[in-house]
Image (cartoon, rainbow, N blue to C red):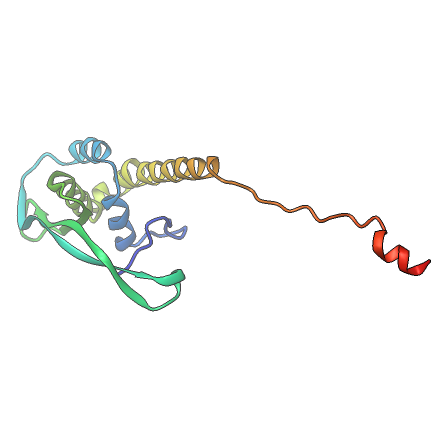
Length: 167
């Protein structure tokens, strides 16, 4: 499944894939604060955090044929909170941060629990959306400060050569 990095999900019900995309980009301090407030129990690992490489593809002009752009480092994990029948939390994050990956997976598992869903949606997902919007605005301001507007001035015709032919 492919997610654009700078797009936000459509308004309305957010899908699990959209939630996981938000959790993967959530700041570590926000994850620690909110997940720590909602979960203090143990974890049952399905897959401990492991780091590897993924091939990234690009398109010329955004619409052309795909080509291999390069590799990125990704950390992934899967876990269950408490009982073996609890929902599984899964996370994939860019980089080598195993702690951030674990917290994102715990948040994913908690968001599947109706008892924690509403509170975490408000505290974590809304705050992450706001954080990402602020980052996008800062990026846009930096880019706007380097913008150069080119313009050309057309010569005004003062009736020079054309007027002489008429006389």
